[in-house]
Amino acid sequence: MNIESIQSFISIVQLQTISAAANSLFVSQSTISHRIQVMEQELGVTLFERQRGFKRMVLTDEGSKFYPLAMQWLELDSRMHELRSDTSIGKVRIGSMDSINQYLLPALIARIRNENPNLQLEFVSYHSQEIYSRINAQLVDVGFAFYPIRYDIIATPVFSEPMYMVSPPGSIYPEGSIHPSSLLKRDQIFFTWNDEIERWNNEWWDEHEAPYVRVDSCGLLTTFLTDPRRWTICPASVASSLRALYNAEIHPFQVEPPHRITYMLYRKYPRGVKQPLAVSTFIDAFTEQVSKHPWRYQGKVKKDGE
Figure (spheres, rainbow, N blue to C red):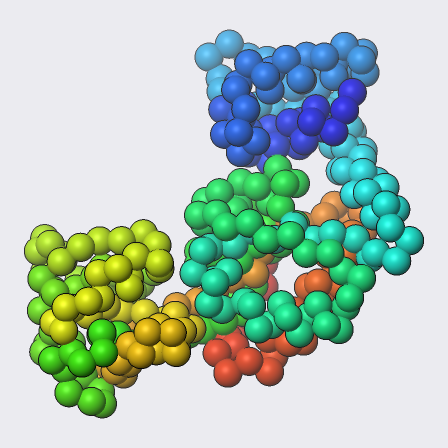
């Protein structure tokens, strides 16, 4: 029995199918099935009910008893890795959207590192769905994403950024605020920030009309923001960086789009299982730092069940 087998078991429990667990761990379904079979042979028990024609995996009584032990195994594995350095609190693996990693987090992370020099941080960029899958699979400790999808994950809103119209330096647009009705969709560099902002976009411009170009990376915005007629919609962190780096023009909207909400994500632990020290240290430090941020989320935070 090894950590890969334990991760496979936990992923099946949380995602309920072998195919979903395989996708989250980036292995084949046959690999997941083999790991479970070997683990059952070693334990001498059956962990899942096997019913022909049913994809959903259901725990046996023995599987239900083993689940909290598997979670403790992961916790012990994490703590053993923390022993590699006498001075290290441990490592936190952080998965985040590319635009969050590049434009929103760096200043906060720098302050957290200065105040917690023994805390190791590892950043990787993913799409939102990948972040949730990797948190469930114990491959990421803390995530930042735009969608509060709920599995066995706590999703707390931490940032609320206003959206701006951004155009290249020397654009055709006058200084100051701008009304959406004065913009043409055929000149738009379109980036899907979240569903609410896309719906707002469709209220002002025909969703069947094509923009100048669609992009899926913030790095591509400057590639196409070269013509004085071009424009795009950006959250405050991205807009500020484009102005600082490329002298881009920033225009508030006279009819504001919804803010871009960013969520901090981390998994729930079963009763009796403590959160790793490195993870709790990072979450506490981040919560303190974000409370001073100008774009901090200031709405009501819903608790589970509300």
